[in-house]
Length: 141
Length: 141
DNA sequence: AGCAATCACTTGCATTTTGCAATCAAAGGA
DNA sequence: TCCTTTGATTGCAAAATGCAAGTGATTGCT
Image (tube, rainbow over all chains, first blue to last red; front, side, top):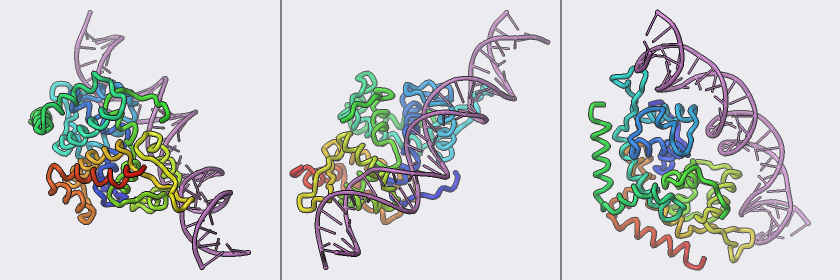
């Protein structure tokens, strides 16, 4: 984790310094909800991230300790990205953003379904989803 | 509210298209926790926002319906910014960012106090804080 | 063995956004 | 009257972003 120099010690600011941009949380969303693990998969996002930005953000998120990167055991060319606990803990943030947008923005109903189901799942739904992510991503990382 | 064209209808993306940058949520933070209402006050933030960016973000947030702008009744030069309901509803998002940062980032303990108190206040603490903001900001806007 | 396809990126370059300092006009206060 | 305060705007350099093309190391197919 590269040493950084922060604008201030405010919790809100420190969070924004890491993921306060238009792409970082979308990469994490794709890992959490679409099960993406490879560069090529992230590149194919709906929003159309460009390859240089994707490479930059993946490196930054790994450096920040939110993702980890490993070689695919049965395909030497493939890199596999995993969420760390620090990354999985961003789910509550993402879930709140989703709630706000579903209330105020013109969301695509099909894409709102995941969030609506989570809301219907009661207070434990986020925790259950985080537990599932731990199984997938922290298993033998 | 200017018509925008969005990268996708995904709730996460739509939120990021509005406040997915390094400054917007800091302005809202200053309104929520420091009671700031005037341009000059925002300009004096710890993080040092520059005046052109501040003007740009304030206009954008007003356009997005998150803030409203009014003339100060007893000072014609002063503009007074208020949170709308849509803006107040960002508190849960901000509270989650605060939690994550307090867990993982090197926050200034003094600046963490507000968030810690909110967490200790139980599940109703955020709602109470939102109710107080409604009193201040929606009263006679 | 040969070769095209796939993999995770890089590179070059134009455009956009940001950051910084200086400046502005209108209004208030002494 | 003159000085300060207000919410900005302007000019310019630097950084970030977006887009298209290219790179080199595999891998799978024949």
